Length: 573
Image (cartoon, rainbow, N blue to C red):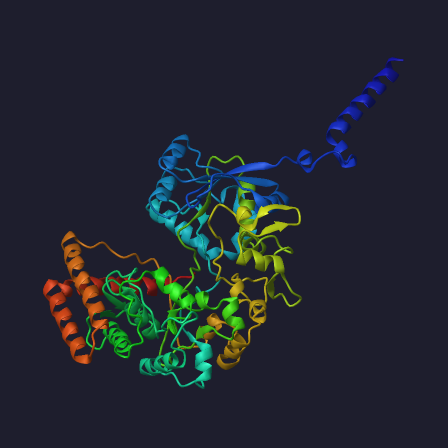
């Protein structure tokens, strides 16, 4: 009897245990959370401008993929100090710089070693296999911070490129009114003299904008003038491939510095071009006083025939309405020009992804970071859920769905399909990227993460004027077009511009003020004689104020930059 009673009690105990731990398998009333608890990770992001739980579609994606939710903790006065004092910065820490606070965190042991217990390879295998240059860069940074004591891996930087050939989208695309260029019979365009003639003909052909106001060959703005007149300097960059450096331009091929006042140099040559535009009456007379926003409004209304920048050209003018009318701003670079592009960082940039040393969930943190670094993770954070907003076709070309396109056009687009809120509300609030948008996606058919350069995007171009440009120029978009031209790519290096002495700062201020003011006067000179007089006076006044010492400092900086760029090209990454 006693034996039977014991068997009965054991059977009851077994049923009780089964009902607690196994019942969810058979009974639909148990939720997913009951099977496995959702873990909340604190993400301390110095780049975020949002506080609280990640919401919307990205929250749902992360819950589905990793059973995790994110609590975003933004930077603010005293936040780092108070969190560092407790020894707990957060589960994941995203840095706005690889100096200052990051250095302090490394020295004080506030970050988790990614190689501890083989964490990286066990839970971050995609990072380990595909981001080796970024890994080596971070270990080298640790070695530098600790003065050679250790080379611990604490994270990877943002915006990682996949090869030396990756580069940011070109901004110097030399956009012109292609519809007018077509009407003129696609005339030859070899140099700046040809461009001057072309712009004169365009203004004759279409002297008014969409609402009957005067149209001009080009329209400038002074908002971003620094040491020189920005638009003049930028035109030299677009034509010669020399990048701005201080009070002149830098040639990455030789390391040579071309001062702004160099006779027949890039700056003065382009200054003369704009004066010629003015003498011909086709330079916007408001260029000296209008704002950047004013200039864009004129472009939107068809008041401008040419922009060296895509962001002030095709990106503004090519509205659906203009395209339907057979009008477009599209790239046509002078044959002798060699536009400059800017390289992507194969070892990543300075916004570091890391894990806090005090986390109780290092494996989950690494799994999250690893997912964000996969092609699917990168595309999802950029465009929305896979299958709903984007996908691959049978040839592994990437494409946006109709909903995905609507989300890119309007961030307030609601996703639906079980996802709450708008695209913007669900966008990842950490505000950092893993791969560069310009990096190659190894899962695709040779495409990058930038949808504007996908084959599908070119196929979506339905306007006749865009197809005419594609056929004539042999390219599907501006990036491919400039890629086929003689151009230069400025590599990302460790170069940082040095400090000026207090004495040089005072000289610099006087010289650059004179340079900018006289440059604008020269642009508006009524004839060659007046132009020559203004430039000669500008040169004398700048030289008397200490221009030579400014050039000497810039030449030293040019050599430092040249050495840094040569060094980065030697490295394994």
